[in-house]
Length: 125
Image (cartoon, rainbow, N blue to C red; front, side, top):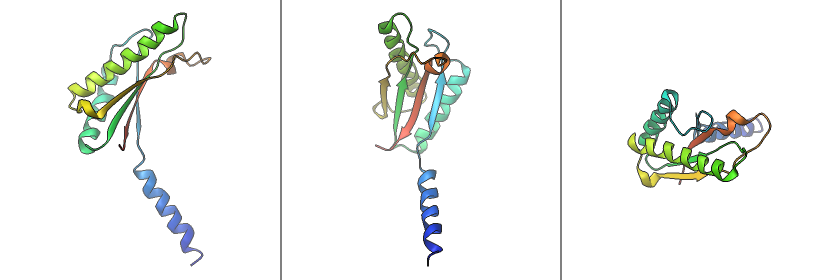
């Protein structure tokens, strides 16, 4: 019986991990809100997965690097999230299943490329 409990615990953890939401990331060029071919391919994957799991919510979080003008950077994060949400909608994701959230601009050293992104997650409601 003692050996059974750890095995049962590991099986339970594995089952939970299999249902964990996956994050998808779309990167942008500096100062841009344009989706390139790689970004469109990622969004097609998200749309297909959303169609297979129609009860899930698609969370879209926009980011931008903090430069000289924080209000312009915050607006860029919003515009990136909107561009992704619009493309997801065009790819068949229901608009009421998309939640957009801009994030505050980040000035982390060495994170300029990482800050030019949108993260997408399919989450349970």
